[in-house]
Image (cartoon, rainbow, N blue to C red; front, side, top):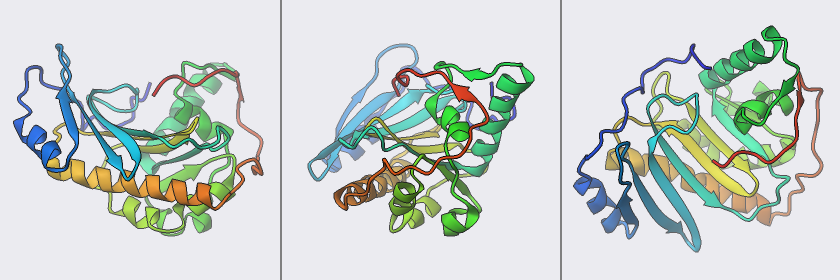
Length: 241
């Protein structure tokens, strides 16, 4: 689907890999660590930010825009289902939008089905922040959501410098989104090492804190700004992340 995306992260997880270094890393931080058995391999780490539990997974990609091994971080925030926000890197935005155009316009399709990941659907369904609204993020990131107010409040503070400090290299996809009360971060990561996991956790923790801050301020995502979509979307529950 995303043939234009650079395949810099196409190495598959090595089965039977030893995880001693990562197990020690998790133990020193009071996280739980367990390897995932089977041919594809991988591991799961669980921890808490204050009272809020989170889960880190590394293994085969679950999204077409991530080649090879994928790092996933997620946490249940208990937010309203109306909170739907997406931040992603500029290259991935352009690649996704081209894929959607090719699939649904050049292919003479007019409806987006639920086999398409929600983050791809959102790019054509929801308003995008302008360059002025993105501020310092505008050169490297795009952001969309039905409520620009909620999205801008989320980015207004420590989350913006945390995004700019993310250990991204050229061609590496990054998706940070809130959907159905859950915060999820996805990126390609061929070789998980403790230093990189620490850096991604810092970004994820900043995202969690800022989401809770905006929610505690009582921001109303129901006052959504809207714009006409390129496509109409079929309704139905999003796929599991």
